[in-house]
Image (cartoon, rainbow, N blue to C red):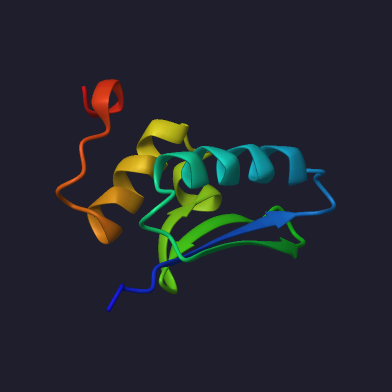
Length: 91
């Protein structure tokens, strides 16, 4: 049976961060096309930009600033496919 792995990107609608969230979602879906069973974008307010994997917060803009895609890819990989190589992103 295939494991179920969900990613959620919560973004601030007031800050107009949908394009940033959608771009990050595209990067993750492209990298983990067989490992992720779901990726959702969750509208929020108050400057929120949080990435969750299986309900665990892996990135919070308030604590860590805006993520580089490679940093988020590593965090997602460590939880959903630890054996997966990210190629140049691993360097």
